[in-house]
Structure formats: C-alpha cells, structure tokens
Image (cartoon, rainbow, N blue to C red):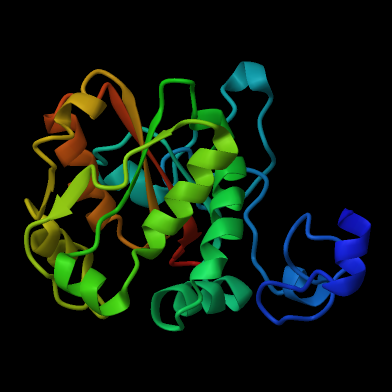
Length: 244
C-alpha cells in the first residue's frame, strides 16, 4: 500500500518540494547539506557545538559548557538544539513563524525528539514556550506548540500545551542586548493555575523554535521551578551562536 501511495504521491522535500526517495529525514540531499545540523561535542546547557573531540564517557561526556553558559546563570539544567540558526534551518523557522507553513512543525518536532532523547524520561512533561494571546490570534497557531506536539508523540511522553502563559505582549527582541532581553522577559511568564499539579514534582522539557540569549526560556524555566517542577530542561530547533 505504501509503495502504491509513493507512486501516486511521491515524497517531497519539506522545504523545497523536490521529489525524494524516502521521507526518513524529510529533506532532499541539497537541503540536507544546507541545514547546519549540530553534532559532535556540545554545550550541555544550550546545545551549541564546542571545539574539540567528544570526551570518553568515563570523563563525563555531555557535561561541558560554552563560555556563555559558564558566565550566565541558567534556570534550566540541560539543553539541546537541532541546528545552528542559519541556512535552511533559518528558512524553516521563518516559514513556521511568518509563512503559514504549519506542516513544518511535525518534522521539526521529530528532529527535536532525537536531539533531546538523553534528556527525556517516562515522567517528562513536554511544554511549549507560549505566545501572548494577541500574537496567537494573529498567527493562528503557536509554532513551538506544533513542535512540542510532534516531539511528545515521537518520544511517547506527556504533553501540556497550555502549561505556561505570557502576561504581556513583548516587543521585538531584535537588536536587544542580553540584559535588555532578560529585563523584558523577567516575570512575564507563569504557570496556568489549573496546570500546576501537572508539573509539580516531575521533570519538564521546554520546547522553543530559537534560542538567542535564552531570556525567554529563562522566564519559562523559572515559572516551572516556582510551581514545583523537579527539574527543567530545554530543546530548541535552532541555536543562535555568536561565533558561528
């Protein structure tokens, strides 16, 4: 049946619509080459790639931090990112946010599930970074929620789409410094009063599309910890790296 469907409806690349032989990755060869996937040695806190070779397991593989995470106190414990923000991944993020390409949420969430597999346990609660209701009304969907849904289904763990709420609509973060971003987001996120019981005493995995300074994830992680989460980890589709 699947072979017949493939003949009638050949699989297409999720970003350029070129015909592909299989949908294992969702990307054609060219788009795959233009997607800066992260691999090798990474910062255990934000997922950004680090120079050097991966250490042996006995030496503490996966516990290193980048300079930024060493100098900034994070409210979450560990973090992962699928790719660096650039090339084809940047196009995907922009298409998800502004191009009405909600269908990209599924493959992106599946990639994120793979990137964060070592952070996920049977008790993990997946939660997306929230949009303010006015932005959600205009955009019609929360791209982080789409990815969180696909991630939870792939990893077979619980999902709470409305765990977090934004108090105020924030201005664009473009051009803002790390300090300015942190000030804007401070106290701007809280756990839905009726959902506190869901995160109390269990690990929470936050899902977002892009991490730049980490201010938004910081506010979300703090809210989860205040409501009793046993730990908070994060995963993003793209990580903005200063030296990338």
